[in-house]
Amino acid sequence: MDALLATIPSPDQGVWHLGPLPIRAYALCIIAGIIVAIWWGERRWVERGGIKGEVTDIAVWAVPFGLVGGRLYHVITDNQKYFGPGKDPLAALEIWNGGLGIWGAIALGAVGAWIGCRRKGIPLPAMADALAPGIVAAQAIGRLGNYFNQELYGGDTTLPWGLEIYRRVTQDGREDALAGVAVDHTPIQVVHPTFLYELLWNLGVAFLIVWADRKFRLGHGRVFALYVAGYTAGRFWIELMRTDEATLIFGTRVNVFVSAIVFFGAVAYFIIAKSRGEREDVAAVRSSGVTPSSTPSSTSPLRPLNDDTSTDGTTEAAEEAPAGDVAEKDKKDSPESVKPE
Image (cartoon, rainbow, N blue to C red; front, side):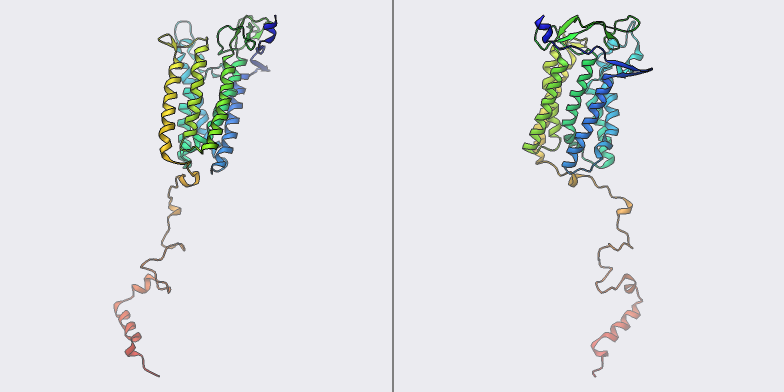
């Protein structure tokens, strides 16, 4: 009895209805995470020499790409949930029911950010460094959505912070852990809250990379690489604890392999990018495309002096005078032509 009192209760439900409109906790957590990432990224970008509002401009590209990429990765790696006998392929589009793979979200989100940066003339590595803490903080907030959905937990445990799992039932009597409501508060299982482990780990990574960035003035994408390495190090051991259905390779969850591969890739980039020197000056490295309006014209008052313009106001028109006139002028100005007074 004491152990049950010490455990963590699950929410009774993860979906509320405002008339015909479902309000999903998972979606609200994702939105809240995006807002935090943009807000924090904007502050860091301005501190590094960027212009206010540019992070929002980049997010317009990165967020939709990231959501699509996250869903694609989930559907590909957990295809057995949507394709095959008795499955509904259209359910692959129901992103509101959960299922976003961070690897796909980061990969396609980076493509969207690259497009936005190219359009704004912003170096992508510098932008990635500014966004990194906000991204991992957003991931932590997103994990709260898994808590409301009663998903992504580990095996049974007797630890005092074990998570209670309730039986949820819809109005028509169908069991549904996502859309149902808890019948009562009698747990059918007490499990490792792996979503909570990852949430706390992500917050730790956020503090780590902010500290390292201030201490060592990291640049050229090294803050982002440190975030990726820190996140994947935690995801590796947390993934081994999870018991939800997943695609297996040699009996091991696919995300365990992905975490290891991405970790080593991030560490390699972090080491190699050190040779690029100190943190870049965002204002200095911003690309400056030359436009027709910025090209000096022959009538521009800023046109530099050259061989065609003399310092005493003589212009090309004077030099284009007939040779005879020039010779006559020279003759009149010569010493011989000047009579003494």
